[in-house]
Image (cartoon, rainbow, N blue to C red):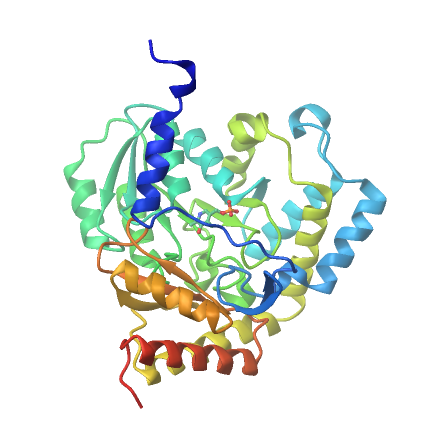
Length: 399
Ligand SMILES: *Cc1c(COP(=O)(O)O)cnc(C)c1O
């Protein structure tokens, strides 16, 4: 037996390996609200990292709603909803979201991640069941599928022909479901959902879309990808999050009443974990109010994204296949992307480098996240910093 003090040696080695490969994450500490600018280490930085698409993370209407609700209902839900009862606020949010999205019913969970862990195992129960999954689906879909203990068959990214092929080649004796992200977070491309919905109908498979990056972004006034494509009633389950465009936290499962009712009976993160807190729910209700009242924030987000993407392209940057406010500035190798990000930081711009294994080798990038909170000056400042660093590092031609 080795000495007790050595039982974590393996972990030290693993961490050291990550550090030596430059893959050990250092997390920045933010000393301000999450906004178009943030304060880091006493410095003001232009923020291109957050999924705070509509600038709601520090919006006065959401802050006020949260404060008022705390005075009326307190903070926490006390226990899981099936045991301690459910607060009228949570029911109200679910009803409002269902009406907003044009679905029969909604159930909320603690997060988008949990919504996947709740939904997939509740619908795909056994070893006979098969999940057809886009190869670039989010980690929470992968983990939810593992928990379901179903067979997972991956198809080529956003490729309906390959989806048809794998369905044809997979013998199915149990239930089957197709799952895709709505917006793919690293490239900003949108799932070819109309074709995928056709396939689901032709084959009788359930269809689930995780619209985390589309909620509050795509569709009329931010109603999501199903609204964007006019596919109401043709997608069985929509997963959403209130941590991105909604600026708060919380998961959404939207769809048929029968499915949502079933999740109240069988979804383990619903049955065994407490609900969203009071201020979260109240702030999300205020977000729905804002989105229903006006499309101003959503329109500004898209206008900002268009301006910034065109500006980047005019400078000579390659921005990939994006169709959404996610702008990947493609750089190639990971060390270059990291150096680019560090130099931007020195120039007052907070923008993340993303490399392998989050994206394929040789496809490292800076991912620029747009927000309705950015002003025209912010976008100019961002473009100037990218131009300066891009020329300095030889990514774009000198003037
Ligand atoms: C961000 C994201 C999630 C997780 O959402 P949270 O509410 O932050 O847990 C799930 N799925 C996809 C596709 C996402 O992009």
